[in-house]
Length: 145
Image (spheres, rainbow, N blue to C red):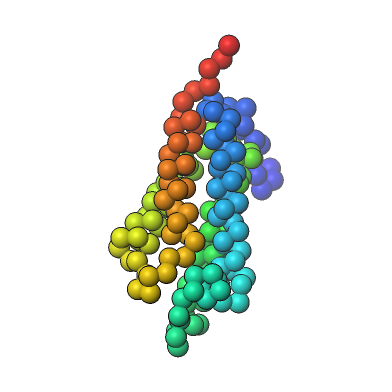
């Protein structure tokens, strides 16, 4: 047995668009993960426009930590979308939880003190709505003719 067990895609019964959306969500998670992990400032200055003051090292470390989790989750989503599609509803529900919490934190609980919202604050609520739509499609069995 290798790293990955055999594909279970033949067992997936939901709408075929749902795993494709999960693929897109995976890529939209992996790319920021790469940015947070490998950009010299983790994106804190050049993208989020944060004034890190004398805490730059701490902020870069936190961004790199977030990037690591984004890479791991994004790769998991990609594996499900491409090889283990019966898990698509579960991973779409996880996207709703993750992005929902991110939206709540970015807009309600911890909004930026400088008034500048990074791109993720705008993308997260949109992704929650889209993930809910595709979750519904993934849960609804395909009609057979």
